[in-house]
Length: 291
Length: 259
Image 1: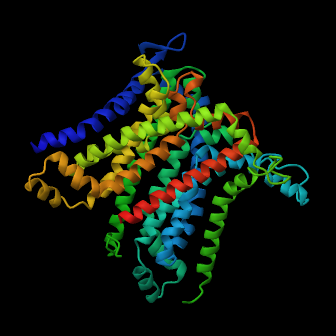
Image 2 (image 1 turned 45 degrees about the vertical axis):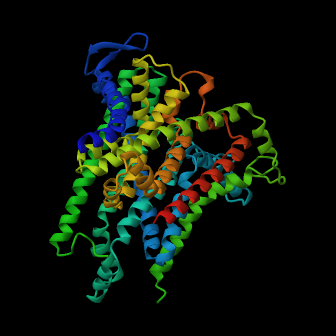
Image 3 (image 1 turned 30 degrees about the horizontal axis):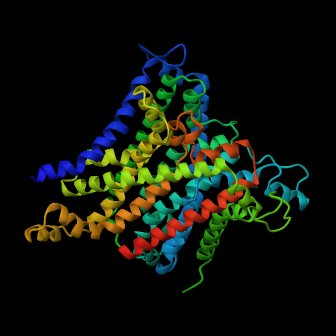
């Protein structure tokens, strides 16, 4: 009786996800092992050619570009996000929630519009270039848009709120006691940060980093609009294989590789967080982080 | 309290982060009221760009389409997602179920987009608003389920048993006992899925088909941005920003009342 009730509750959701998530993913995995038909369809001949081509110089360059851009965006977002999250966690308790909502608020407006705002600011006739020109700082407009700089900036802008949120929950869980103990034992601010706070917030750093990296490397909109197609990333490559080149098997193989990268990172993050917790425990600090 | 230089530096940094986050948005809002529409010269206050929007049938049609898609996918996913959350909370924790529900939230959009397009094409399904609705429900079910589950975690199951012991049917118990308790979570989940759906671009773009009739609002915005910087986008941006901030504040209030 109880089992059937649970089955009734679970069936629609699990059925939906099986049909519209698992099955479609299996289909593109299967497509990635076939050849492209002459007119853009699927030629059902088994091949590993798509995966081999993914290693060719053209695709490998886009892979490396994507990793570099996503990696830079992750690093910058962490460097900006960590002190910000720390400042919020150190603010009076009754103000922390409002400060966090203020961080997350822009994120809730449309992604395209947030990206468009940077076109308005960065283009040759944009606010920054015209402002600097009128102040006489520059004669020629600076090349701010349609390059790697603009793509990294756009990614950081869109994802830094998430990093702050992840780091805040990690930092605020620490409580002041450990830091005070470190001060009492003669540790300077810097030593306390390096030896106490930073190691204990590694899981939060890893979570935030994986998040930004995964969202960045598969991004389509930002490299397209702010990079102007100059720096295509993995997401743009999949897009063009599907909609322009009409090579669905190749696009599917690239999509599958993207999922593998994502899974590897999530797995690595879980192991890393687990080990960090273990190390802290081994040093005699409870991992459950005192409140 | 001593005024620590590190503390001052941290707070200054946080202030700059807020400037970084809000200046681009504020610039768009200010420009939307600029008569010339140019980012560099202020030629006077005007609402002319909003008037242009109201007279643009393409934008209005796209907004209408997005509203249809968001409402339909929210209804489907709130229903299915809430049931799923209840089913998952009742049984033993199952890591495979957890992973399946987490998957649509972390899978890259572009991968879900090509997977669904391949699936629909294989089925020979006609593409349009209906395929966008079905696609958006995939990630929305996962988000609804997650939000409702956090609400159910604090739910005292003994009141359900009490209701059944007192002779109420399963349906009555759900309607009169369970639903009122989890309602704030369900409403917050519905607001979240509405917002996610109305903003979603890449999956809609892939699953909308070739017809002009199924262009959604983000697809229209994308087309306009690709076309070039036009002042009309500033007006759209201001409306969208205002609307989404209102939704966030609403769900914040709901959350606070629930807590």
